Amino acid sequence: RTLKGHDSTVNSVNFSPDGKTLVSGSWDRTIKLWNVETGKEIRTLKGDDWFVKSVNFSPDGKTLVSSSNDNTIKLWNGSTGQEIRTLKGHEGPVYSVNFSPDGKTLVSGSEDKTIKLWNLGTDWGLSDLMGRSCDWVRVYLQNPNSGVKEEDRHLCDGIGGKSSVSGF
Image (cartoon, rainbow, N blue to C red; front, side, top):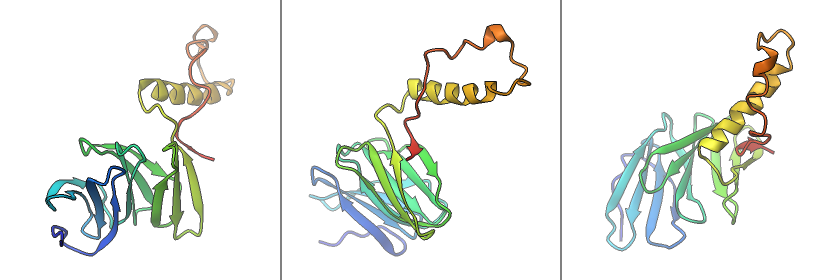
């Protein structure tokens, strides 16, 4: 069977963990999901402004990862097609991305001659956002000229202390 739908070179393809879905990434700047049984396109994701270099599924099949010529990595909700977040850190196009078997770490390889490991953690919700924000606030408060009153400096006590998405 041949699947058609991209308007340019297809750079990367992978099966979902259950084998029922394919993901493809192309120079046409799209990511497509395909039903393996029927060969029909399920959804097109558009969010990359540059060529899509690599695509893959998380081990649970719920999240997609893509990389592109703009030096970024994007995480996507596999069910809705919505972008979850963009990871930045490479200084060149990212040619390859993949999840660890437990889905908690992402690995990427780039034209910048580096391999990066990204700790994804397990919580991408409000608690993670609050924790990351409070981590930043703590660093900011180390500046004695921050202008924050002493009585307000406790607002982040007990929140955060770690970041669930970071380079190792």
